Length: 325
Image (cartoon, rainbow, N blue to C red; front, side, top):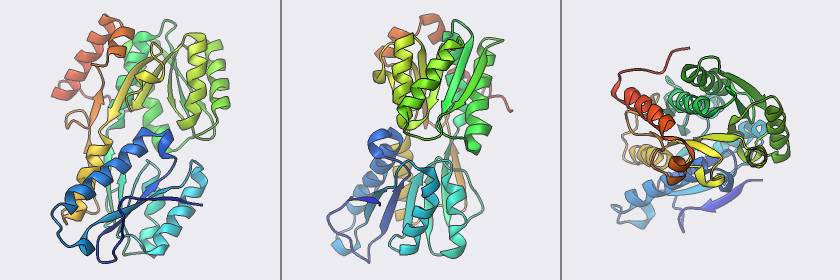
């Protein structure tokens, strides 16, 4: 079953039709909420200059759930329907899923946020420099760890998780304080909060005192465990300090709504560079390690804040770069 919601009151065949493929549940993910917001804002801005109603752009939002094994089948079904001029989505695994479909459905176009694929003229990707995100997050996690033991809890294993997110988080922790270790655990899905709590409890028993959860709804269990045991939590992709005040020490957000709006407007105005990937990060203003939130200032000691601020400035001005692994 797909859950459909309409972005406009009417859909005209002559007008650009956009399908927003949400590989998850909007209510559980600010990343996906901002994806939808970016598409809607792009359509609203584009339609201001379109006087004829039949030519105005519109979109449908399709929440396809958290079961990753079903995403390929559901994207194939939506593509095969031929209902959409372009399908917009956001997930590191989507380029690998969408690329084979372009052979069978050569007219279908895809805009994929959080993706990285070049050379396919039916696909345009925007790739946030997640190395910067997790390196900074690991660096502060290490500074805040009394035991010099950190961990990443993932929902599932996939190439970006194994090759970027975990290793660069671990490298950031090690560079901050030599000898800091980083455990890696997998929930097995994006929703099992009980399993998330169980894993976090076990990590606490090992001496881990700072955790980066990248596990969707399962992070609710990680939060509960962290609060119970006095562990710290670090986050990427969103401002998460309010999730657990005094427990969350960092949020390294992406400007998902802004980037999505820009990409969709480029498409609607015929300016998109198909077959390419736009890579953006701290320098371009699409990654923001949040430093002005009162909860961050209250929770993280001044000395650690100064160190992370200096590191961010150095990355932005090019004095240093994230190490290559």
